[in-house]
Length: 628
Image 1: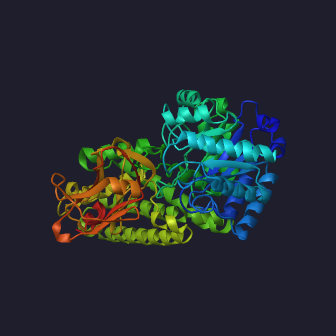
Image 2 (image 1 turned 120 degrees about the vertical axis):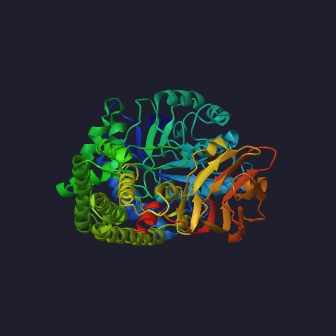
Image 3 (image 1 turned 90 degrees about the vertical axis):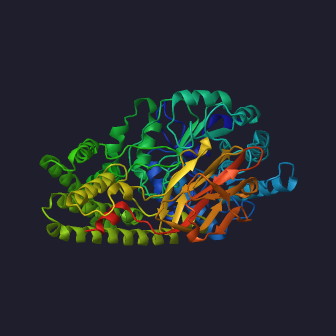
């Protein structure tokens, strides 16, 4: 239809009220497509108003844990949620934003079933009656890559629903293979899918910069410019981190649309979205640093809050090591000082007077910024304060430990150091208690299916935290009170390993009694005979193993355990419902567990859970402090 060819959004009326530069990205905004704690109606209303201010014009609703969007897509929403959608639609219209509703079809959809299509069109009809005029179909993170089926479903939605309604925007679809280039699925989809349907794409990787050369390649595969789904600043795969840095890594290239998948921390995510909006408005003239610097005064009218958030954001922007291998800069201004301090400590275990003064001033600046935010946010920006208070507390405790570590480094005797040792112990206990409160608070606000993946906040992980720990170890080394040496203690952490290339970036961590692999939400191919797993230190005892990998992986593989990583024994696991689990005798000393694909061909694996239950072990600095 003429309308579908002419407009690049869900509603011609919404876009008629929106003006933007000739070279701007035509469809630009947000996709709520993460796993985890939902923003809720109030959060979405706040974001829609912000999008209106920033000239962003598309909001795609597709949270992974909304059952009526995914697992229960055939069922109507409860009336209370329909009422909330109507509030969102009214707010979106008022702010010139087209609100899209996405359906996430599961493996159970039968393309040859008239009943399934009847259910699909009935659900779309209910959402149309609710007021939606923009629709998307998602095929990501489940099942196989059947390009023919996915194209046929989308073509039916277009021709048998959207065109017949006559007032809907173009269909947006998220394919099963939504990253990389040159995949047979992508080429087949591009050939079979109606050219009026937009195809979403995340870049060279699931989390990646958007580069012009890659966009050119996928444009050829899709036979149309891609609709970018940028997985930044989403933190569902790195929930201990806040991603408050600048938007960068975006080339000036031709795309059909661009949406950012933000953090579950809705208000904090506006810093990143400010930069995304500025890029979308003018890709060729975008200045990343300038946009980031000006975002604080634009988002936070209180100058004191703006200044403090600028300091806090500077040191909280990196994801840390993850399976995606996607990193962001952090503590850029402080990085040279941190490098200098580390070099001095490596050289002779000491810090020069000049460096001590500079590092202490840095710790004090960060601490005072957190104090300002702690004082002001509960009164003026409760929503933001609620989201980030765990990180603010963790940052303050970390900076306090840093000051104590500097004092310890200069203490003349162990007796003189005792007061600061006691302070550091108290700070670490307080940080642990704060993390516990944060976890309980976020778990209470998270969908049941995702509650177990809530993680404690970790502030300033890339530069400041390692520096604090390094100064602490150096101080204790100087005082000569380590029992076994820092080298032995520093190995007291779990580690991941893999012979499967798609899982090379796996990360292991300990959270209380669980030593786990990082969650991998997207299916990764593990070839016949390939393995991946987790190893824990000698000082830890294991008494339970539990994996949740999905039915296909469970049928194709086995769990093997080892004491030394060289000799392996098949574990007799209870395999049901896509899970593999078994009790372990702690005295057996199993320190390694791995999954091995014993089938003749490759298998798709999603790591929902892969863990040992463990006892024993301690963090390095805790272990060293206990010796004083």
